[in-house]
Image (cartoon, rainbow, N blue to C red; front, top):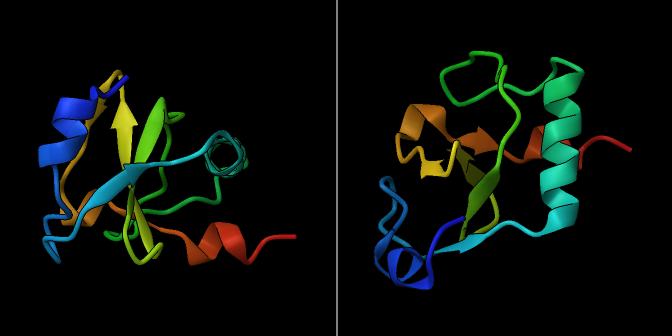
Length: 88
């Protein structure tokens, strides 16, 4: 996973705000949406690979995916959370 040292220096590439690791509950919800092929990133592309983890922006609006232990810190790859939180 992501070390504390790395997490301390990473910031949102869009807003330059701190990030935190997603919790297990949110990660499970994201991966459920991936499995159901209903999770899209900011570019509008369907997220096809399950996430190993995620980095949550401070305002809770988006998650930057972690795939194969690598944080994907591109604005277009960010996953807007309203599509997960709006689900029952």
